[in-house]
Length: 73
Image (tube, rainbow, N blue to C red; front, side, top):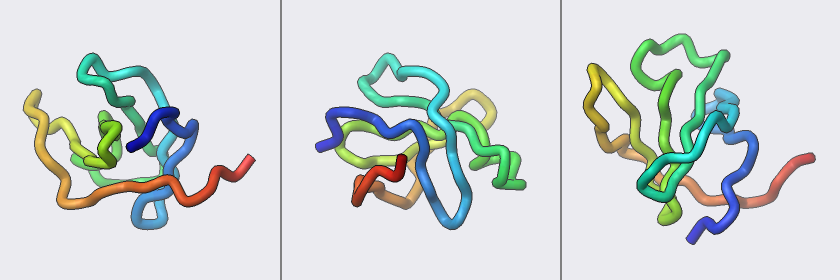
């Protein structure tokens, strides 16, 4: 269970920066590195490690999970 959301995530080689909290208990992230229109903005990380993305105003489950291994300062 994630209790403190990291400032940055690394997913598939792309860096995501934390933007804002999610009302459902998670945090939103965006990536300037990821060229995809779908998975570069409004990625949400939930406390259980589930990742979602928003596309056309709908939140979709991203078939990935995330766990914090170590935080790099």
